[in-house]
Length: 109
Image 1 (tube, rainbow, N blue to C red):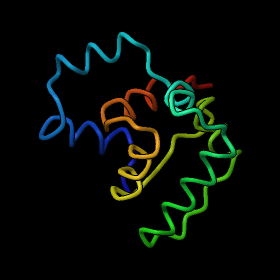
Image 2: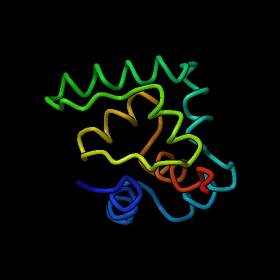
Image 3: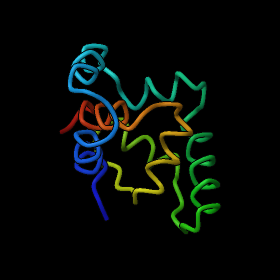
């Protein structure tokens, strides 16, 4: 399994966008909470939607409200398979770079 950040940065350099785009997005201080708020979902709604989407792609992973909270506060980093990562991006209406920056910018202990 990939960590989200390493997968995103590896894919970023080959496919998604230029480094100029990344620096512009990092100035906007993207966070998981801001991505979730942008699509007007509560933590519970995001957890339910991700669990539903993961099931549709054959993943048995369940996402809980506590998991979403832990990701947003930096207690834990999300770890998704590449197909799950694409579902997260689609749910949050963001690209892979924004998601990676949001995970990287999460507060940590």
